[in-house]
Length: 474
Image (tube, rainbow, N blue to C red; front, side, top):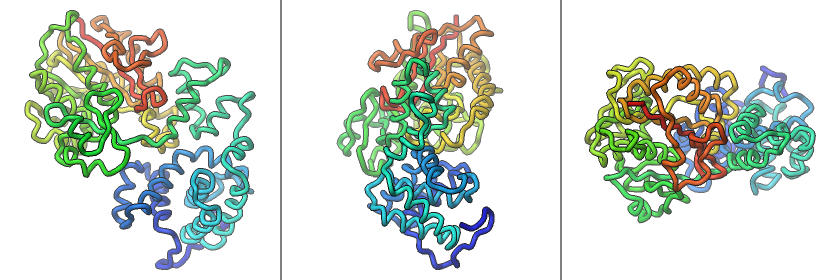
């Protein structure tokens, strides 16, 4: 292999790389180098490459599968390589990971997996690097994934968290944070944590949301979808392009996780006074971009005879919200900072605070987030989350309800934020969020967080979305 920083790439115009593997490599490199989200980038790469059908499916599987298994593959590659992974040029690391995924987690033949990886290495790093890739991947090919994990992962008995980190391809700090959120301790076993980590590695199905008053799950079912498991608005596509569904193409339905749908529904269901008979005229989506929950809230608000204001601090995200709400009566979109609101205090009967977060509840769909985030990133989000929740509570009228929502189960982004804000106030009651969604079992957080709701991939087949319902005392 060429020394780090010195490459001997093949001459331009003489690419040997298989197109599907080339697209997957570009997606992985962009995720690592530019913090790109593969679920947003990959469709454009596929369109630009002209790949369709089985080739597009292969590129998609290679990109997402390599990201999900990266931690496991790195541990195995470290055993098979004669040099530390951090001394290998980043593009070559991606080539090795792609090759390891093909060898250990697909039905691609070993010879094809190694040969196509060698061709890719020649194009991105030159002949000498290709020889290194060939040698490493031939070692990887000598065992299957389970056999390698027995060698590469720490012992389950001596280091359970470390073992789970390698086996299920999650950074160790995330394993610890998830087990804490589940209320499990390593010395008592981490059975549910292990189930959650395994679920994070599964490819999620595409869930659609029929906007109330504009579409119905029955219409989506007629287009080939199946009824959702929990949400009355949900339908699930086993395969196919959701953009080909007429209701989606026309903006009357959209792709939206069931837990996200139910968080919006819970806000609409919660009583706005102690007897549930308070006024219900004005709703606010405080951090509305890109508009998924706002679209559903708009339908729920129409059904309740209420109006919705959707706000986002970033103009481009506000434009996405405006597009999502196009033509929806009784709605308005504003570019506004939720921490320094442009509206008067106490103006709204229902407020959704779906705050910026680490996104670690959506690792099935955004596997790269586990490698991109750090404990420092989570800590840095705390002040913004607390400020947004505080202004959301101030925006609620006496008797009004606030839903605090994150796509993360980590305590630092969920109950710690809520409890921290409530510690400085005496005008808020905590509602029983799981009781508002009685059709969904297993939502209640461990005590003393029992009034909060937490969705889980392994329990509910959804993203790990957190929900707290708070009522401004009248």
